[in-house]
Image (cartoon, rainbow, N blue to C red; front, side, top):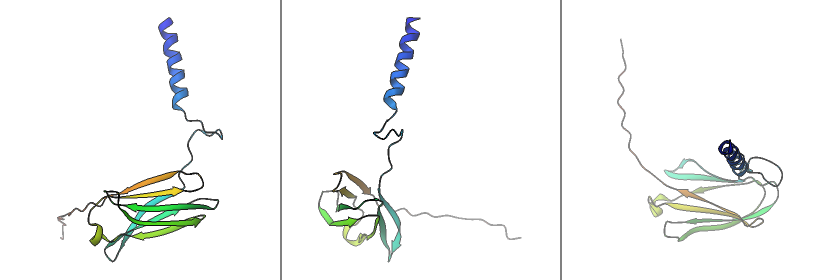
Length: 131
């Protein structure tokens, strides 16, 4: 009987610790207002779109770094609901891994994205019945 009581207490404690409760009473954390995504190629170069979906005006620092920490690009943008596109010059950076850091000035939080370029050749053979 005592063992069952201890198991019940442990389960209640586990559930209480595993549920994230935010200050506003929500059970799930708010989604990020920063989004970096690959949108395609332009003149054989990869193009990425950075969306800053903030309702109130904020200032963001955007920094592209190579795998050794060297700054390849840095800029600051200010406003709300900002969308910016970036084209990478693959002749200069090759297949190196890039880190993109986007830091908000208002809440002093940053998000880091990693860009890995992998190349693969796919060969496909298809057989179709004609008659």
